[in-house]
Image (tube, rainbow, N blue to C red):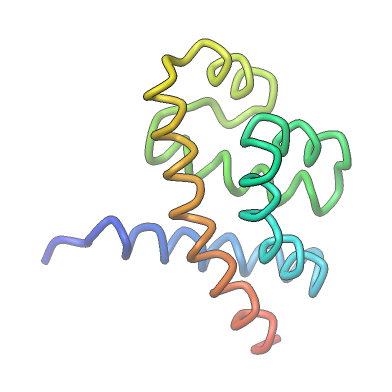
Length: 119
């Protein structure tokens, strides 16, 4: 039986939510819920830079997103190479990466509260 892309996103988000909630509790959940709006308002690269600069739970969330984008699109997982890769992308490719980030975050923002409730 083939696993769909949505199932892959859900599984990855589930695993990362468990890590994030175990490390940072409800703060991780709240950050996950707000991240899509933040990206819509400021842009993917600006938000990734903001999360990296804030460190702690913010960097954990950014790393989780970079991990998924690496798995799906082959982007680097480390911050600086990831940002450099995004800066070199064609506009259509950058838009595809951003769309994929939103698709994964849709799962994370729903799964993280459920995981937190179980803990």
